[in-house]
Image (cartoon, rainbow, N blue to C red):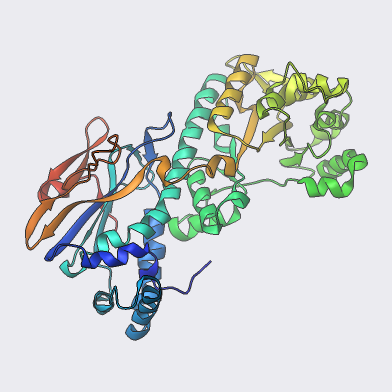
Length: 478
């Protein structure tokens, strides 16, 4: 979606009234962005990510195309019409907008930690200050757009980082192929996100840690804003895969023939993923005469891997993957036998395994499995723990991370906020801060100018001089 809108309307409406609320003589306002609190117990750092996208797309392209390069009367009229209609005629005025158009640039100085770095919760990772005293109002005016365009990139990158950290821990304990973790979490979230831009943001964050994704526009997003090049490097990859519509049009009675045709004729080599729960997952993976083992020679003769995808469970994915000692009464005796074993053990019984150097079973590389419904960090860790206890390497399965994982977050997940901490009024410095008496301490802000530095990890000092502020790990990005 591309709105025909002035970038100066890409804000919360109340921001427009602030120019008249600041003290007379205000010249400079200095603010910072900080992830103030983690609402996820195992996360204590965030991955800084998203500023380059925000700067390229909005501060550069959008402001140039939709404001500075427009005739002044047209650019100002667009702003005036909407603010008059929504806030009241003449309430805001346009003198400051006209002056900004005359300047033909955004008078802002933005400093930040390098993108991709881990920043401790509570440490500022970005600062913004105006560079022309006439535009003191602009520093916090852009907060709405800046936060909207960056919090999800930071949040999804952080989620993916900690998810991979967990998978790596178990892979190091149970597998000889730790590199497989790069492909062990696949992004399935496209259709469940809050719009195309949101889907691209999530995928970009995911791809900082993992190489598997089905969100095609995420590749273009990373090429356009982060200089990726899918012609020369692996940005993200996927595999041919069926879905329920494919199985349904063939019919239940023809599912075996469909699987055979796909693995021998349509995809005779390479990885192919087969959704296997349209009708009866247990019949697909049953090592005692099920569809896949009945195609044993065809599976073993392929140069590649046939991946089973079960995406539904009467209980949780844990039971489907690792086995359920107490199957649901709706299963018949033959089905219950498979459910008791779970998919991993069923594939093992049908196609065998090797034992790696760490003493754990690795499935025959001709078969594998992926599960992509309602996966959370905690559930996946439980699956890894259970598989390890069963004597299997945790790299024997892949998960699909969808909107259940990437969509159940908000800006408040890590308390990401932009707060002013310093101002200059009539030539005098003022250290300002927020410290609500009714707060538990989360919303207490830094005070004054800020220096971020390394002291056995990133930390910060506030109430700095401009000289101290200049010697900071925060570097100019705009």
